[in-house]
Image (cartoon, rainbow, N blue to C red; front, top):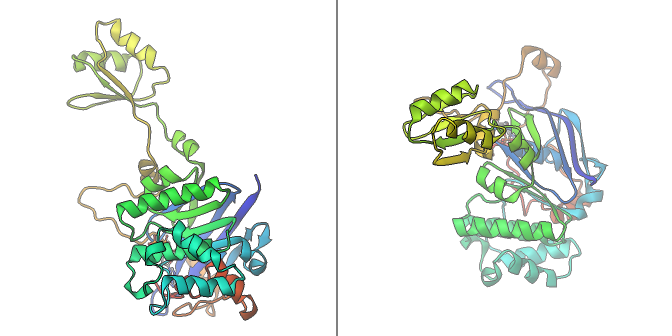
Length: 366
Ligand SMILES: Nc1ncnc2c1ncn2[C@@H]1O[C@H](COP(=O)(O)OP(=O)(O)OP(=O)(O)O)[C@@H](O)[C@H]1O
């Protein structure tokens, strides 16, 4: 497998005029390889969008290296732009244009045959609404149109920021099926989301970001296995006696009113044998495998605590030393994107979905 996206030591600090600066990315690393459906998970404000925008040259990094298809980004992005499509944040389209006209425009700009427009409209389920003005589209339909625009040139890599945003349950399922079809067709997908169940269902690999840093990465099964503590739910008639036997065998134990949760079980047969030998017959023995949600909550330190409302921002305040290092002239980013592809590259950028028709240019989130 070859690397499609490589990010090493990415740093980005946003400076607010009146407020303190925010470290959005604090030495972030990521590796996406060919053929992966790679989930990019993180809480609100953890740095997902900043990572993607920086990767696509829409925000300037303070430090770090990025490569797309082996080419340094953003410097060589125009060279590889025809090979990938990207949708970052809420797509912005001209409301007066129809979906079909929007795609035709992008197809013309990118030397894509016009026949492809109908193919992608069909692909994303907008065939029957293609002649309606975009202003009348729901958020979910705009999402689909954005995906269609990113698919126009048959990309090898698709980068999607929160593609399920605004979609109804049927739309989410369709989006999931679409992702699967695309990966079957050999497209590598990088998908940011905080819908954990979605990531677990769609993605084979995952990178979890918290406070601008990678906290874990790898195949979803391996990440989950790393959190598997060999826990089993056990039901027996005489819980009190069973608890004694289990504790004597050295297993960690949590006693619930209706069942026991036994930890450290490597051989469930040995557990049932130990109980059976004491005339305690097991009525249920269920492995409690961790799901991505519990792993995510634990890794990002966002496990909900009763009575304490979770605070949304997951970025970090910089240390004083870092501020001094940045210097007083450090860039202020309010209202403007700092790096755009050069005009000569606009066509490639439009086709990559990073142009104004497909992404928001809004820089101020705070
Ligand atoms: N242009 C900007 N100017 C100032 N601060 C910014 C800017 N863009 C992002 N930030 C800050 O950087 C941090 C990371 O934001 P980012 O949008 O990357 O998070 P995210 O993981 O995509 O969150 P969400 O899931 O809510 O979209 C946040 O604290 C955010 O307020």
